[in-house]
Length: 343
Image: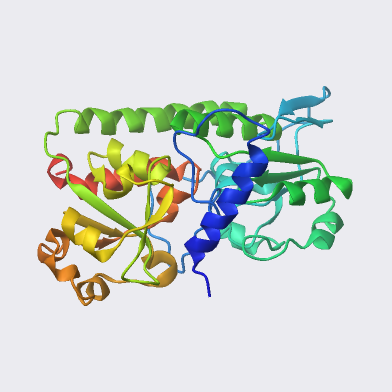
């Protein structure tokens, strides 16, 4: 049976071919295919994170002028007023909505939206690895369906053919793209003031990390494990991903940076030759992989990471879901790789 990230890689290839007609340019930092907006498996016990989720506030007063925004597929999407009944089809979308204080405007969510905890009480319309429950989505009578790159263009068209308004939020290429996505969702929901405050806070936190990391001379080599279903050829994150970008910003060097492809397999021989100083287990979230499991793998004990007890579980949702918690992920990486900067 194909592994999660093998399926993700195939999905990403197909989606990329479809979307290439919609937008030119090579992404600087995209997300794992199925995750793309969050395709990691839900965490049973999510690690505590810094980004605060505002308490739901009173819904904004609907505008009398129609909103017209261009979405990630280059389509003009029109709403008669700010959306009050939203179905979110990706975990990253859900996290953005709640972080903006628009949680009370969300009436349903996809199967993988598990953060914040309040979102889990909403109706589940499927998606992710399974089919969307289009009948349920239609019955909820949303005034907006917020899709993302985890959703196919066929799914978008099907929902539109059913008479629904769908806004497609493409994967950001970098943190500036993340801020633009947050503002787009804010405009759709009437939360511009909240977005401006949030973005300013996120930017300030990123600058703090940059200032701390700037004088660092020693940058450790990191192996970020995505999927070790085959421990002799585990998947890691290559160039053009947020994982690669955030590791670099946090003062590390991603072992997969020089490889070809965003999601690639690494042989044990290559990994031992590269000799990473840290091994971060993104697959502990969905696969339960533990440091002792890595130490028990044939040959892995020869790496500096295993020898120095630097095989560490990491909440993959912080670096794979293109939402506000990416900045949490950056901070956590910086603290792990350079604890001397965070006394």
